[in-house]
Amino acid sequence: MKTIIIKFGGSSLADPGKIRRAAGMVAAARRRGFSPVAVVSAPADATDDLLALAAQAGGQRLSPRETDALLASGEQISAALLALALQAEGRKAVSLTGAQAGIRTDDRFSAAAVRAVDARRLRRELAAGRIPVVAGFQGSTGGGDVTTLGRGGSDFTAVALARALGAALCEFRTDVKGIYTAHPAIVPEARPIKALTYAEVVALSALGTEVRQLGAIAYAAKHSIPLHLRSSFHDEPGTLINAGGGRPGVSCLSLRKAPDGALVSAVGRELSRAHAARGLAAAGPCAALLRSAAGAFTLRVPAERGEAALKALHAAFFGASGPLT
Image 1: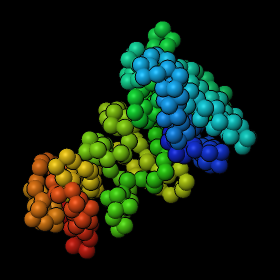
Image 2 (image 1 turned 45 degrees about the horizontal axis):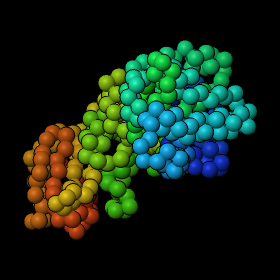
Image 3 (image 1 turned 30 degrees about the vertical axis):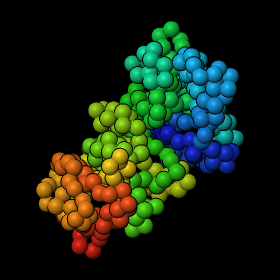
Image 4 (image 1 turned 180 degrees about the horizontal axis):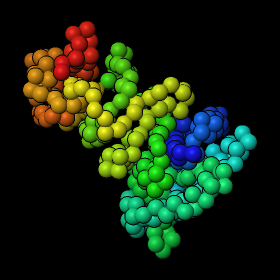
């Protein structure tokens, strides 16, 4: 059977009902003929709660080693609970820490880099018919100390295991259905995107859009690991990320605050001066072109015009006038 990695974010594991739903999705992958490996984040807000406890117990100057040992426990809670939920569904499952899953790192506590993955334990569990549930965000040094991988580190755990196991696919299950042409809370007309290239998602992440951890996407691109961004609460398709092809043009838009205004960016393939010119015209006379390249362009507008400019660009590139290719 082909291996699939299914990674769940913290909001997908925030309470027992959500954990049972996640277990059902993992079990469904097994019924579809895959050998699933789950990777989990700490339950929502657990990491912040642990940091608050650390500050109360240890004051302001916390030992990096002990802080990593503490924070890693959040993901271990999720792993054990999801394994228990899978067992309650009649599936054989086993929770594993990062160290037990063979993730070896350097000794930079709180921002460790993965040096190697020894997947022998994982392969034994899969061969025995068990579903491994791996605590993300963590590994261990050569000396056995627990380390954490930094913000979004569970994403990197997932892609590192996907490469080590030769997985057919790496799914990221979160509280959103995938990537949209713009933030749907600001632009109700925003559309879900079926597929993007690694380069487009790297560009989005670099622009500050919280899609996935930038390092994890870059790693997936380097090793040609197909990704699928999907909802933890629905089974409809999300956004596929791979080397891809597709036609040139704007794929999606992002908005972020800046010290001197708001920045509206367009990401796509083979963007030309004509794309930037259309964006400038849509944003109005207050807009200025900051940078333009084949993969993205960015406009600066007054802070109070940010959302209006995003909506105007969305209408220009995805409205009735049609895409500019």
